[in-house]
Amino acid sequence: MKSFAKALVSAAAITAAFNAAPLQADPKAEVLHYWTSGGEAKAVKALQEAFSARGGEWVDAPVAGGGGDAQAAVLRARVLAGDPPAAVQIKGPNIQEWAEAGALADLSGVASAQNWDGVLPETIQNIVKYEGKYVAVPVNVHRVDWIWANPEVLAKVGAGVPTTWDEFNATADKLLAAGIIPLAHGGQPWQDATVFETVVLGIGGVDFYRKALVDLDMDALGSDTMVSVFDQMRKMRGYVDPDFPGRDWNLATAMVMRGEAAMQIMGDWAKGEFAAAGKVPGKDYICASTPSENGYLLNSDSFAMFNVKGDDLVAGQNLLAELILGTEFQETFNLFKGSIPARTDVPRTEFDDCAIKSMDDMVSAAEGGTLLGSMAHEIAQAGAVRGAFIDIATAHFNSDMSSQDAVEKLVKAIKLAQ
Ligand code: BGC
Image 1 (cartoon, rainbow, N blue to C red):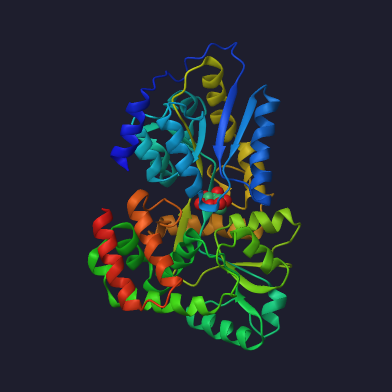
Image 2: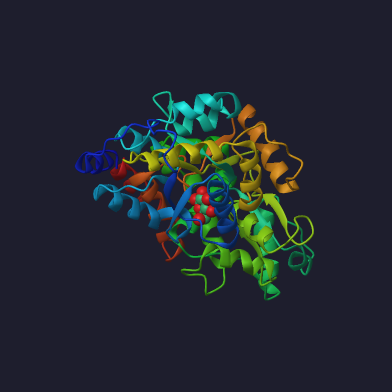
């Protein structure tokens, strides 16, 4: 992927100087993103409105498809054609790869004017900096290891939200026996991988997750613990309804909302859907972290500004970067999106209990060394390695492959992808 990105950029021979726009240019930006669900659309509209209010011309370029895999293909094609969009929603090691390929504008000017170093946690700085310089502007922190539950549905079998995987299985078995769908799930590879990584964290623990999914330690990947992870995934397969293949994640969230299923395992963009439908946490739905020993699976969205020509576009990029890291916008956006601000100094008053839990848990995970990057959501891994994890997780989930086979295939696939 690294050399692929490089090749694309040099093929396109793009040059531009960031921050060189004369003040009089009217800001304009084509914004490539994949925020098309109810909550996501509200959140991105808030950015569009803030941009327009400052005289910006926003050219919307949404690519539907949760998790962003469809958008990644569009981005590569645009860069190859020598016509990258001005602002693109990318994250994790992808940022580093595009920066290394020379595709990204340097945001140092706006970053020092707004003191990004002083207001962003180090974990986030490391994601959006390349060789010490800011090359992307972070929008939020999303937590991945969440259960979203319908309390009324759980009450039908006398259960609360499970706090261990054994309890999860026992509750799910009771729900099945009562004719209720235990787990709302959308059968798309990235969604299978989302559930998979929460199970890796829960069954294996923080150190195991780090060894297997972050450090790619072959012993961990090929271990009995990984066999147990796939055993649990096989159980999970039994807890989803027959119509799950291909279902979008937000439709799975709607099943929990409507009481058609008891729980969904999904990042807190699901909360954006509950919020968009006017649902109240603690009353209409419950958020709880998936069973684990204090782990926190972190995902963070950001926008990278691609090197483009044109004073209006450069002015647009500067304005977008400035708006995105503004305290006010970080609050408004994240209230819609279900995430928490990337900045640490945004007042907590407007945020609900799920967001406060995420903020507190993130701080204690950072202090306790249990903050981990999400594999499924491109923070721990990107490109071929992430693809290999997702392929095996989804191949196992959607077939009768044994856990032992899955582990052997996983070790082979990761070795090949590295
Ligand atoms: C992104 C979220 C997005 C979700 C569903 C995640 O990878 O970080 O912003 O809402 O995918 O598309």
